[in-house]
Length: 241
Image 1 (cartoon, rainbow, N blue to C red):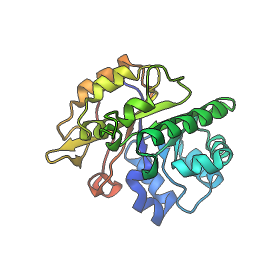
Image 2 (image 1 turned 135 degrees about the vertical axis):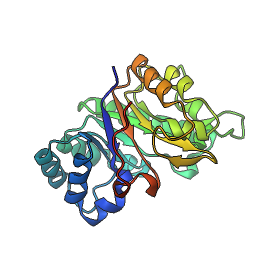
Image 3 (image 1 turned 120 degrees about the vertical axis):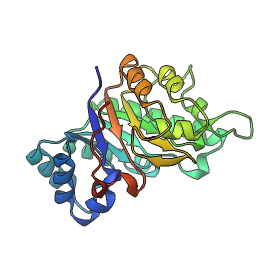
Image 4 (image 1 turned 90 degrees about the horizontal axis):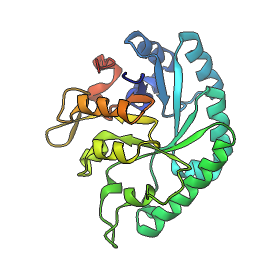
């Protein structure tokens, strides 16, 4: 059974900046019933929630950058509770940490945040890009450090299939490796030249990824588009997965 499909609102960031309520209404009109919040766009969690509730949209996850989690985890947990979402997802780690010692520091912080968040019914996730697959000075990779087999699973992965492929690795292999730590899967597709394209229009085997998502018990598939190709203005709709 295909998991629910959500839209990451980073996809619609220009529209959200211009008119939050109108953008959310258009997201609903084209078929989405679940969203992931990437930013507040000058609003507040309370006002966003009122708008989502009125339209019948549920919020899956809230994105936060690494420094924000480090400096204000309580504030992010409070925002998640206000928005009624179970997940707070770290968008990336800062460039200064992209070395063996730095990745271990990131693991320690995310583990600490994950343990504290679990006490309040919130799950911390980490969203990968492709730099985590680059070989470091000691020949390790950041992704392997962040999800080592002997590491307590106090935070989850929000695996982005496009960025896994962009980093030269196999999304399905990573889905299998992260089974049990992969409630949220970011769905993007790749055009020739490693460009972004709409899900189902590129070179990734989306059907196989969706099948594997069911096998690995992914809870939500989240559509995201990093460029103008998939904005609301282009009429992006939930793909028929």
